[in-house]
Image 1: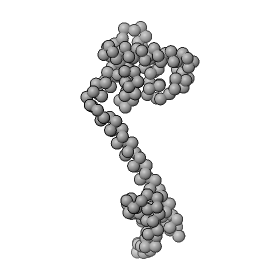
Image 2: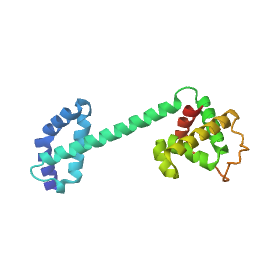
Image 3: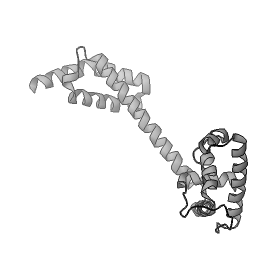
Image 4: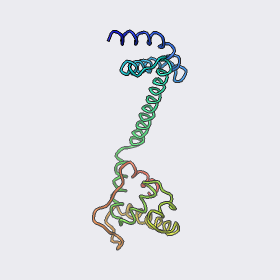
Length: 188
């Protein structure tokens, strides 16, 4: 244990400034201390894996820590943006609108829901969606146009069940709430 502590202390004294300079050159001074601390914490936990000379290995670890921090920051920013999108405007209006779209979708036939969801929820082009349902792109566009019209009519009717003979199935398959906005914006 004393040998490990001595080796680590020597490595730290010899390499800390150079690891810190590397991190500053890649990410700036604001994150350098945190990344260097994490780098040497990893070095201590994996001391047996640290080769001689240690500097290249430490710089690789620092690079990975920076990459992981960047990924975490991107994830936090994406989550914050999603939360802002959900809270922009009056939340009650948004919830009411989403519920209206969900109710309207529930009144459509399973085929109509699939046609709409392939484009709006899964982001497929009409040509790609046509391959999924096994028809030509032209036929899919006609079906999509008709399904959009029925969705618009159902939304105007307040989502009351349709008397259309095309209604099939018992329980509706509904998209997640995060994708309903796409449907309501495009067809309302």
